[in-house]
Length: 250
Image 1 (spheres, rainbow, N blue to C red):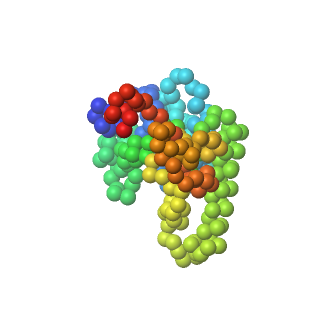
Image 2 (cartoon, rainbow, N blue to C red):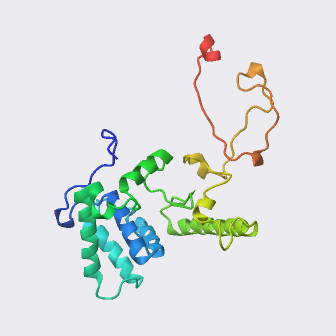
């Protein structure tokens, strides 16, 4: 992201596929693979490529990046044997067009098509940092260990399955409604407009101040005790105050 211009940074010239891989490449490829080969193929490529490239010290070229996706699609029998070169060329043309024409590219000329710029702005608004991934709004675990990552993803999938079954039993989800199950899942309680690292740390414990403090403590006035189970998220805020003057005390 180019903070000086307030917009996503642009990729370098194509240079026969030798230029460094750019985040826009991943965005365009994932959208293309999802539309042409299905969501499962796209997410499988995404997770495998993230795992295989997480420890790379050298920058990956866009040509090699495309080649990794083509090889994975072939290994999963998503594309037929002998079509690798054709699919590679197709993806190269897609990324070259998206790079040279920007917002006016054929890949982004429909109002219904997602745009890389909009995705970056969405991430900024939601305070999502690079490398994060989500399932139905739930952040997936960040781990270089595939076993730990897989276990974390499996727990989230099981939770979502139970949640959807509960909505179906309550009559919220039926054969005819709602029009969007995804939108229904992303509505209701326990939702937050922005991401915060503490939302990941559901197993951590934080000290609640206020239940027995009084005015002389300069923390909180006395209030009714709050049960931890009734709190959706607890945030710890640290501050430095000059207690030698009236402003600091206030």
